[in-house]
Amino acid sequence: MTVAARVQRSSPFVDRDVRVVIQGLTGRTGRRHAQLMRAYGTRIVGGISPSSDAAEIDGIPLFRHCIEAVAATGATASVAMVPPLAVRGAIDEALSAGIGLIVTIAEGVPVHDAVKALEAVRRAGARWVGASTPGLAIPGRLKLGFLPDVALAPGPIGVMAKSGTLSYEVCHRLVGRGLGQTLWVGVGGDAVKGTRFADVLPYLEADPHTRGIVVIGEIGGSEEEELAAAMAASHCTKPVYALIAGRAAREGVTMGHAGALIQGGLGTIDSKTEAMARAGAQVFTRIQDLVEAVCSGLGSTVGEKACG
Image (cartoon, rainbow, N blue to C red; front, side):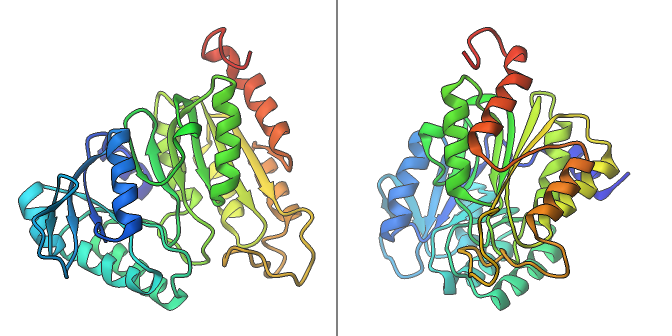
């Protein structure tokens, strides 16, 4: 049995009732998104602010350190709403407190910091979604990060995405057609990251409520090729619909994501399309083509109102 299979059998990707602390709660971003996450249903049980003497903010208990928050609340997950240069320290602090799931949202985390953070996360046996991510969600239950509510709805699709903006648009269109999500994970577009497509696949494959998988990829890196290899190795039984962005990108032009690098023939749109197609995925370069294919393939499985 693979490591991924053992993990999948022992726990879900994220517990539906997970208790969450917000690192950086007293900042403008942390405070605003803590309110939105809590309004969505996420169990925000504490916030971290080393410099604040307040006992609470917006009804959320405030602590100076993660270890104090964990001892008082039983939190097992953290969303770090801190600047990029503070991400590595926030991860180290969360790991020291025994937190098992860490979500970091900041753009521009130094690659060296991300490498060190990934090493620490692996040593601790924890899970890190980031360096830069819009977050993750179990629609209708919780969200960790800032995925837009208008694109979230319970449904039969597992979503994993490099690009936040593209995934918002894809999911918003699918929700408008009656197809929501079982789990949505924004893995981010960083070159060094805590969670990759192939790490999410076993959870979606094993989940009995997930009837199809949507992958939002892009040129650069080898993540889609790795996912294709994982799909082939695991004999993935669920339909996979992949959007690969970047066909019109010109050679030598810097892309917005740090991970959008083409090296040694890997990372091109042709490489990704060929690999994913060989593994059995349907691959698209236009959002609406993917949406129509998902509706055609999954609409009949979720009732007459879907994809009408």
